[in-house]
Image 1 (cartoon, helix red, strand yellow):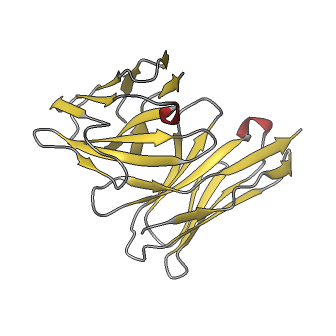
Image 2: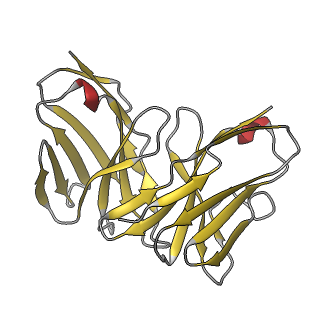
Length: 111
Length: 112
């Protein structure tokens, strides 16, 4: 059973701080990793994807991947109240090409 | 990335009835994925729909309960059959694009 684990939170950070979201996965053969943001009542929207070990930066967001530790993280710099949402970590499954999702981490950014 | 039009956006249905959810994609895609998101939970894959072949269902989901149609490379439907209150969820379709996976806006189903 392929699994993706996330701390469900809630994670609360003050405005302007760095929010750190973590995810581990069980399938060592996984190659593609995604972070989605989901506002309440909305569908998930893609923030970033990462395929290679190391860091990938896009604006205020940085994804970090460590395949040896089977660990992927998302850093949000200068957090804003509008970043308050549930963040879903997803891993691409080799069998059908679908995504396997973690349960999500609820982030709250306090003004 | 692909744009998906999903409908209906929400519905309230009587138990024992069926609801068909439609997803239209603005480009041709090989596979479409159908997910369920139960209240307060993450997304669970129901099935993968490949044009021209039977859908592939995940453990715990069966064709009689969730029949899927995939008549062409831009369209798919998911039917939730013989509904019970336990089927109350958000149902989402998804496709893979160059920059990742895109989701439809979701169908919020309430069964009473």
